[in-house]
Amino acid sequence: MIKRMLIMLIVVGALFGGIFFLKSKEASATRSAMASMRAPTVTVTTTEAKLEAWQPQVRGIGSLASVQGVDVTTEVGGLVSAVTFESGDEVKKDKLLVELVSDTDTALLEQLEAEAKLAHIVLERDKAQAEARAVSQATLDTDEANVKVREAQVKQQKALIRKKHIRAPFGGRLGITAIRPGQYLNPGEKIVTLQSLNPIYVDFHLPQQQLARLKVTQKVEVTTNVYPGKTFPGTITSINPKVDPDTRNFLVEATLKNPEHLLLPGMYASVTVQAGEARHLITLPRSAVSFNPYGDSVYVVEKKERAGAGAVQVAKQVFVKLGPTRGDQIAILDGVKTGNIVVTSGQLKLHNGSFVTINNKVQPSNNPSPKPEEH
Image (cartoon, rainbow, N blue to C red):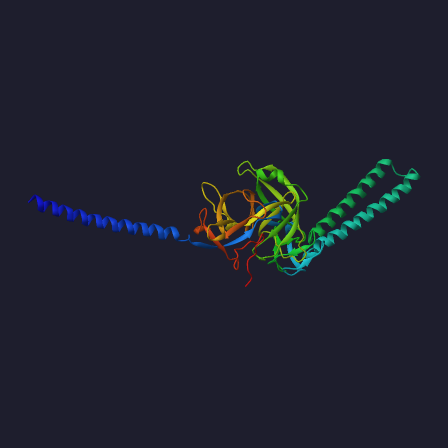
């Protein structure tokens, strides 16, 4: 029995020893194969880090407003006898717009003028008699006062007649009106809107931390979705001396030339202010930056010598300090030097030390002022 047990143990030991030997050889072969394998190469696009002129900008949202704009009304009531304009007309200052019936007022004016003329005649006659001491000084004083009263009545009546001839207070474009001859107008009733369109204002708000960067005469550029891709230049003409205590924003007003009358009061507009002197900064496409909670980074491509393979290109992760943005670009304040080759796409497959192949046939957008495509 003991002999049989020994034989069985020897056979089992030999069996397990053989299995262990085979597994060891297999693991060793696998390690050797993996050691001899080359790490996968990732295809990426790159760009060279360069210094570019960078104009500091401040952006805001605003509304357009006319330099002069008013709803034309009447100070006195009356029946409309004539409407001398069409809706949408361009008019000059003092252009007659609406005329109210004034026959009775004109007749009364003629009467007052006749009375004033008579008062002058009486005054001149009494002056002649006063030289002969035929009338008293009190009579002359009464005559002179009567002349002034009559002249004042004439002026008052002329002013009333003028008020019944409603004229444009300044040049501009008229709106749409529903006033027609024969209609009765009440005092203060709107006749038509009149807007001066060239130049035109743009009013916009900015947060208080931007106040020190702005001053009168700075240049602005205005865009509106009414005219995609078109920019309207202007100049800051006024900065409100008060900050809104509720929003901590302040109001800025810029003036734009509008000779073609493309811009209209009330339009929404995006405003870009050229704030400060231009400087030179390293710029990269936004797609080159990996934004992470623990820090923003880019991958820089470096050449290294590899045993048995010669020079290879390797990706190195570099943490960067970001600056302002414009369009598709972002400024790099620290972490990247001029001349560095930076990965612009394909970073998701990279890690420190990844081997890369550069293919720049298709590049991500890097436009500082992208504009919508026109179809």
